[in-house]
Length: 268
Image (cartoon, rainbow, N blue to C red; front, side, top):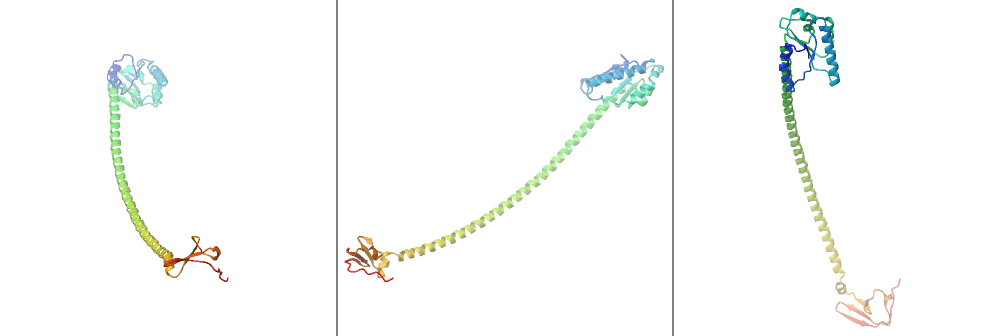
């Protein structure tokens, strides 16, 4: 912010500027220069150079705006601002230049090269305030749009998740039903195989039982066979017989003893 020292226009500007500063909406850094006389263009250029140099030492980024203001005065005093070198210097600045010099009827070359030109310093601060309001409203509009789009996106994802959940439940139920059917089939097959195996075992037990009954000594004796014992041991071969000792012969209906006279082996 460049203005004449203790200028009435600067006071009008600072009324609203200080309010914005207290609200931490905008920060203003003030520099002074001479705005009338032959030294006015050089004074403004030196003040601007010093201001930008001081800014670069304090901040990492460029300022948002360069403001040049001066209240009304004689037309001849304002003529000193119609300087080519000053206008060329301001044209080379990448930072926007806003000016508010004189009254509504006053006009200088600075009004021609500025990004925005205002009739008075009061209208400059009003323009800054309105610009901040517009930016704030844009931010609010973007925020509302982001919120609306976010809600729509969340709703879309929620609907998609519900569809996926239903699909997962359907697939899970299908898998469970298939597993239950396979389990029932395995159970039926197992039961059938178990019955067949049990039946086979029962048949084998019956066969063993019949064979066991057939091998019962009393059953064998009833067929006309005899059991020969000697010294309380069953004799299964003539090689086990002691000729000098008697033998006991068990038949179906009793036991008798016999004295051996002769032992004859079978012919091979």
